[in-house]
Image (cartoon, rainbow, N blue to C red; front, side, top):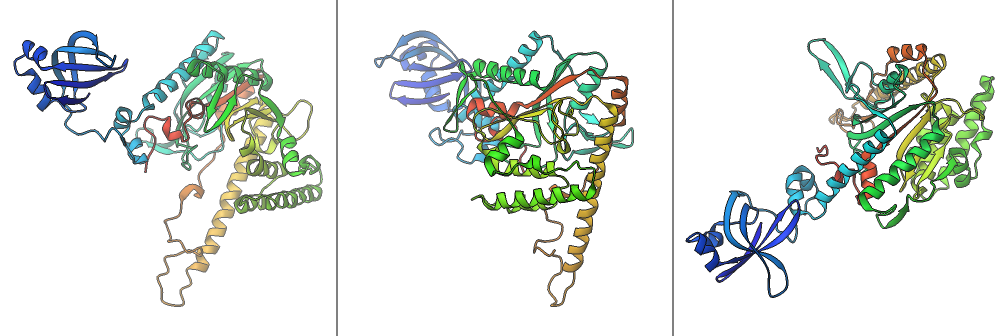
Length: 492
């Protein structure tokens, strides 16, 4: 409650979940019910106090509907002053650290979290109406799977072994499809021990669903519908204003293959470079030619693409090169809803091979406002192919760790030579030893043997889709940062 006193008359603004109303506090009226009541109101009531009032309604001379207070009780006394109402919480980090205070003084914050709740309930209700079953899968896992991401690792004292927090719900949901649940979904927390940005929080919420006897075409239709339903529920419209740009969820979403989009942006046809040749020599030549073409395309960009060029130089396949070029030059240009289709098989180990095109899989990623919102496959159900792909993924991961360790040993060895008497606790790039960002530190990737066993019992043809709830809420509330839509984001 905020107040102002003028002689024998006072006004206050009373706010609760239903809205705000003015209190009209007249000394004579209040003192008739409680002797000295007006003096108490004047001297003891502070902004932020929680009060209960009784009285009648009237309109002031200016026409504002007000409660004429006959009785006022202090229900909770605020011991700390609220920030200035005109400036609120100027420190953005303070807003996130003290969300309770942010909700009190910053307009629109409560509305954002109400919108988030409505998004989740709308998606849940729609899927249940379509006979999807909501399930819960483990957060603690023996082996992190379903995504290429660094897990959080914890130790179970009773079992005396390490567990990871899940990086995706995919593999357990697929087990349920094997078991006979033909339509399942889970809305839950995902944990990835990776970088933080306006788009990334280590703990986030996703919706992941699977439908037997469906494919990625069915998932495209379902994804469009879910987003339209959420937009309609939150805003009442399907055209959304986001960061100064209008996004149209009412029209059919654009569909284009990754190869076509990269060709359009660069003039390079990566389908001409074979990474699946039976000849190792030809395969190597195709990969080197792809790298050369990709680096030239990136060098022609006005943006600083040196980091991406470095990744391309060490890319293990043409598919990885194509994906790096897409992320560097195409992704940020996809403002209106766009399904990017048919990714290289090398970067999609859980997706089914395309039914008519070699070297690619039946997969889409949905991009809106230059960022990924959803990811979907026609799921790979062949247990032999799945094992081969996951084993190759593990082997590639181990090779990368070995190469990084070798490079680090070489770098540290060179940096440890101290010829001028200066402190030698530095690496070759001039940073202090032990202070580097640990995002590139090695972590273990293991095969989920139980998942592979489940596939051997037989999984029906299945379509699956995962979507970030936080990013969808960002779009529907015009929020620039993911931390604006998470009540208590992780902070340093």
